[in-house]
Amino acid sequence: MNVEQKQYDEMVKQVSPKSAVFMNSIKAFFVGGIICAIGQVLYNFFEARGFSQENTGILVASVLITVAILLTALGLYERIGKFAGAGSVVPITGFANAIAAPAIEHKKEGLVLGVGAKMFVIAGPVIVYGTVTSVIVGIIYYFVR
Amino acid sequence: MTKHFGEASVKFSNPPSIISAAAIVGPKEGEGPLAAHFDKISDDILFGKDTWEQAESELMRQTIEACVAKSGVQMKDINYIFAGDLLNQNSGSIYGARSFERPFYGLFGACSAMGMAMQLGTMLIDGGFADYTIANASSHFCGAEKTFRFPLELGTQRTPTASWTVTGDGAVLLSSVGEGPYITAATTGAIIDLGQKDVNNMGAAMVPAAADVIVKHFRDLQLAPDHYDIIATGDLGIYGKDLLIQLLQKENLNISDRLTDCGIEIYDAEKQDVHAGGSGCGCSAVVFASYFLKKIKKGEINKMLFVPTGALHSVVTFQQGESIPGIAHAVAIERSI
Amino acid sequence: MDGLFNGIFWAFVIGGAICIIGQLLIDLTKLTPARILVFFVVAGCILGGLGLYDRLVDFAGAGATVPLPGFGNLLARGVKKAVDERGLIGVITGGFTAMAGGVTVAVIFGYLAALVSSPGMKE
Image (cartoon, rainbow over all chains, first blue to last red; front, top):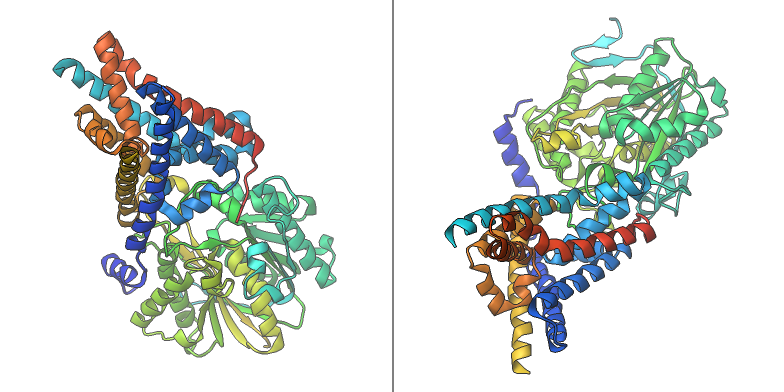
């Protein structure tokens, strides 16, 4: 071929359309914002019923996660995600979707190596890196507190 | 090597005929502009089966059966089946062909599989090793997503350059005797890699291979740019086609007035929301085995160059940071000789 | 009542803004969803460790706790609390304890979802 890789990269860039970053961001903002606003409504609801701050946090997360997984099972979360992009990936509901989606997709490979193992293909790294970071934070905190 | 020409091309001394063909697709393809040309459109994406993998195999089995049934040839007379797909270890083709009990070659060339299968099937016949061979390629949207991307239920966005894997299977039955359309020549592609790494832009990864094989085909066989009425690449998509025209211009080969892409033909890109177009082994296979073959038989096309294109990466090599190698195989089909 | 409405409004604005950061990462860097999730949890945990994220939580409420950096912050908060109570042992128990509720709910319902729902193209 009469073309160098760099030159070809440039041609590919020229021809390929960019993602609609602005519109995507607006959609992500609204959907993500609405999910968080719903979270706030739930906070207010549980707080008004006398739950401690810590338990309220767990309850809100649990409700959002449960609803997100229900929507995933009904095939609706993928539609929201197609519209919202990061708006439905970044909230905790996206984490729930990332657990339920591969579990459903791989159920035909069995309950142990299909559902059990594949459940964590996307969420696993989150737990791993969250844990590692928390340990580092904990060690530093132990010495500087 | 009396039948070998130039760097990578062959011409057949007794060009085999395509005596039968069949194309079966899934629901989305059935809503596309080529719906009228398919042998069967399944409303059921699972093809009555339990898993995506079984669905693809069933699709493959039905298509080959339909192809053979239309020909009047018996399954027991088929000397070789060449088939390729996208699932790991070619399982789509293997489980699909299991019940036929015919000599079988499973091929992996990603979405170039149909080109590979047609070349090999033709070479065996012209070499005198077979009278009847079947070339087949299949893909299934859900199986491919599961193998290469994310679970279907995961809420993600596709980028504008992403393509949509065709659920479909195209089969052709090649014969040493027949009245055409004939496969007259072929150019086998090399693995070409210009360092593309975006799995959501596979058109760009495959274009250099397509350009390379097309240039070699015209050079090896000393053909004029207007030799073919139509040149159809496999699944480069809308942006890939533009890139290919640019690359060929650099090689002083201008075929843009007769160039199309099966990935562009199979869907209505705007209405069906497929972004860059269709892709997958089944894409070029079904479009050729239905739409183009009918046009050739009707005389709307006399000479066609069919160039299925493949992106040869795996999930593992992608995760290891490797670029995406491309390949393309050119097959010349002529209405009469 | 004004206070409640204000809280919901700022949860919407800040939560949405965090999602914009995620969208820019997806569109401009081509990071996969798994990497985005990891990035946010790690970032939240570090900001939480520095004691900065709780200021955002005070201001935006669910707008800061519902997005994944909030999950990271939860881990940081948990590990700090555990270290306060148990010393170095807390380093290895704090993070997991803090995420136990959320992860358990996700695993249980994810498992149930897999039992009742089949993979499909639901378009």
